[in-house]
Image 1 (cartoon, rainbow, N blue to C red):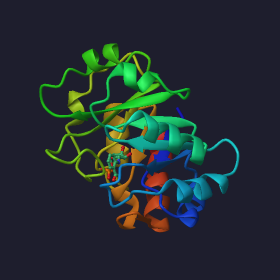
Image 2 (cartoon, rainbow, N blue to C red; image 1 turned 180 degrees about the vertical axis):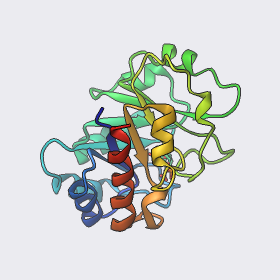
Image 3 (tube, rainbow, N blue to C red; image 1 turned 90 degrees about the vertical axis):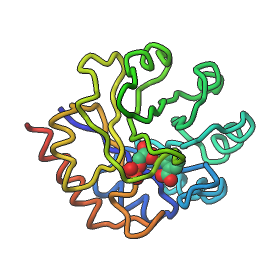
Image 4 (spheres, helix red, strand yellow; image 1 turned 135 degrees about the horizontal axis):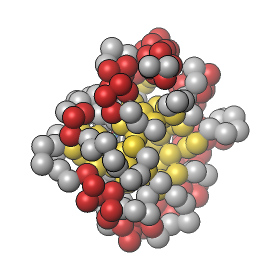
Length: 208
Ligand SMILES: O=C(O)c1ccccc1N[C@@H]1O[C@H](COP(=O)(O)O)[C@@H](O)[C@H]1O
């Protein structure tokens, strides 16, 4: 099965084009101001305008207010919203765009309950719980915590990189994978060789 790939934390046009040329299906733009990967709406617009067709632009938010989502999604012409905080299902659903919901995984989390609660989401993105850090941490979680019967498409994230992506896919069997720090030269700056190695790991795993 083909595994979709999102490269997150894009802050430069050239990194977006590199990711796409290496096979990424989506790029992520972080609209959470405290992130080192934060991208201002005007820059995001420039990045999205440079994308070829059939590539998704995903806006990443952490407990945003309504106006911020409306402003950024319309300025940058986003295709999909990624809610990475404690947003309620009602909040996530109130925009005229599809959304995915991130869950920060730790022992004891009930992922089936999340999938039921966010049944309106296009997918459940599983990231690693790190106290005080909403995302982009580079840490992995225990993939055995993922139930085999999740009723939503699974987007696996959290500390993925070229050296662990094959094992991650083998264990979790995700619909898609999402990576940020694992393909960076520095925060917000992507590394073409790391992206290429990551994509190779994904492609090698598709035939397993
Ligand atoms: O990347 C960020 O800075 C970020 C900030 C706030 C929320 C989410 C963020 N990124 C998302 O974090 C996960 C995992 O990233 P990593 O590969 O472990 O670095 C990924 O889903 C990003 O979309």
